[in-house]
Image 1 (cartoon, helix red, strand yellow):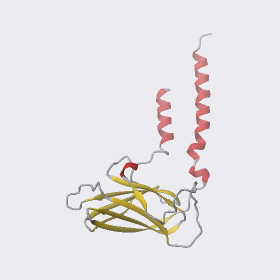
Image 2 (tube, helix red, strand yellow):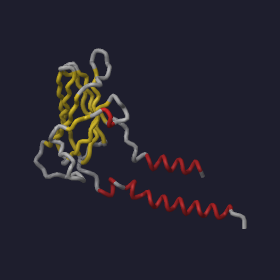
Image 3 (cartoon, one colour):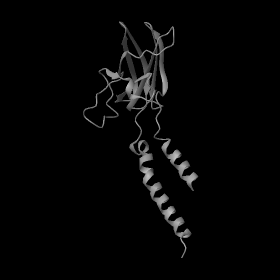
Image 4 (tube, rainbow, N blue to C red):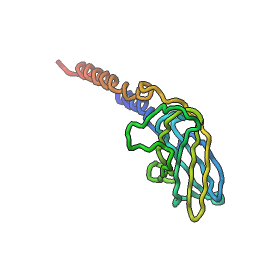
Length: 180
């Protein structure tokens, strides 16, 4: 019974586990920086996008830990927004969003959440400064429409029935063991 509950917990939590990084959307050596840009979710959809940036010295391969990294997103189409942030204080992504090392588990990655408001062709621009050097890379992206709310939140909606079923099963099994 204990093994079953551990297996069920692992299977349910896999939908919630997010690793640093995601899919590589750009890699380039520019102005003395070896830059790799990761993004998740995969595939890229309108909504919040986790952007992580690895900045390395191209000669030694060591991570540059003192860079100032910013990320900005812009849509190439004039379509209306497919997704609006859930709060008014969230930026629209057109201005530079600072990426910081403290946001991710991997302390070599600079990361930021970028709100992607519309699907279709768009561009992600990453700028970095360190030691008097500046660099910029851009990546063209194809963003899919956001997931339907029921599909986006199904793990949360499925959890209560599983909890109720688990409780009922526990009660039934514990009644069988109780001597009369």
